[in-house]
Length: 143
Image 1 (cartoon, rainbow, N blue to C red):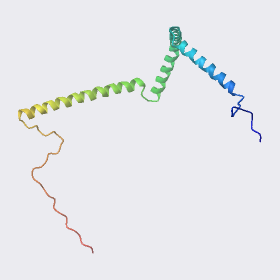
Image 2 (cartoon, one colour):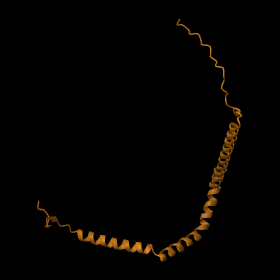
Image 3 (cartoon, rainbow, N blue to C red):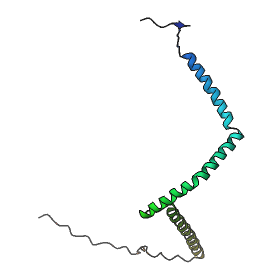
Image 4 (tube, rainbow, N blue to C red):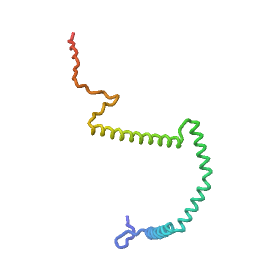
């Protein structure tokens, strides 16, 4: 088979000029877009469009939220507001428990400082001073 025409030892590619033109065009377009997007006029125009979109979409969004709340209520499922309320309550409980723990720690340190031994906490097993042993079971022999 005969090889294609060559120029300086390289194969000629008929698409290469088109690729080069495309690359130049894309570079110029990219630079133009960056300059346009970074302008104050573009920021103002985008802000105005977003404001009008939010104004127009607000009634639809409210209708969807009401429908979702009714649906969740009928399915006996919590809404976002319910979950957030429970999370806030749990956070409040956790903070109060932390405060109680810190206060009890302070009281315990003060008692040790004064020299009074703290009483054992209710519900915890007290260590026995006398060591007890279990009677060992008699081993059964084989019959």
